[in-house]
Amino acid sequence: MSNLIKNRSLPFILLFTILFIGCDNKNNQENLTKTAANTPLKKVLFVVTSHDKKGSTGEKTGYYLGEVSHPWDVLHTAGYEIDFVSPKGGKAPVDAFDLTDSINNKFWNNLTYRNKIENTNTPNQINPKDYVAIHYAGGHGAMWDFADNLEIAEIAKQIYENNGIVSAICHGPAGLVNIKLSNGSYLVDGKKVNAFTNQEEIKVKLEDVVPFLLEDQLIARGAIFEKSAPFTKHVVIDKRLITGQNPQSAYSVGIATLIELQRLTKKTNK
Image (tube, rainbow, N blue to C red; front, side):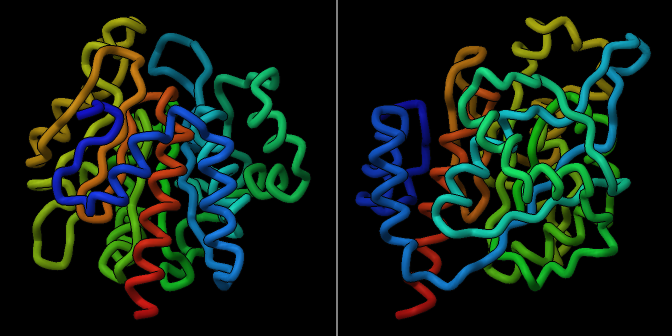
């Protein structure tokens, strides 16, 4: 089986669709968008960091632009409205600012969404009932302000327990480590998960800079951690939790989220 997405519990048709995400993104998205065309507009909440420094190194960081823009492109094209929240609200710092990437360029030059991400909501401005999914974007900044933000963790818990989807990419799963469900268990406990790996952190020489190693912390919370070789596309789906390993996985996380949203919509309408 492909290491792109591993979930033995997925229906065969859904799994078959997802396995070809990397083969023909344009055609895949067009087909999914047609399916969504008659679906009422629904909202997805993106979480971005407010933190702009890599520890004491003096190096700048923030949210990773492609980990916002690529999932945004999939969901926005399919008719979903995206809102943004950050721990402090206001203008979110951006990292990996590469406008030669056509999707980054498309997002950055969309005046509506450029305004939204430069004026993010604070957690207390968010009503979880308004959203069918929440997406934690990565970027090293997330390692400093996602894990301990209990307000956003509570928003994610409510969205998930209202039959919504939680997705996260790269360092974004730092926001998952302290989400507790109403039964007292951690959201990731017993679920298949991936994120930026220890090996990837070592390769970028930040293993002694980040406040914790994300792979280790997710495992400590009971997650079944799956991974591929460093900087290889890898997405995992388990019980409405969708996680991607690295920036290379961002578009595929968007597609997987859209497929799962459409599956839930069909289930609800039966």
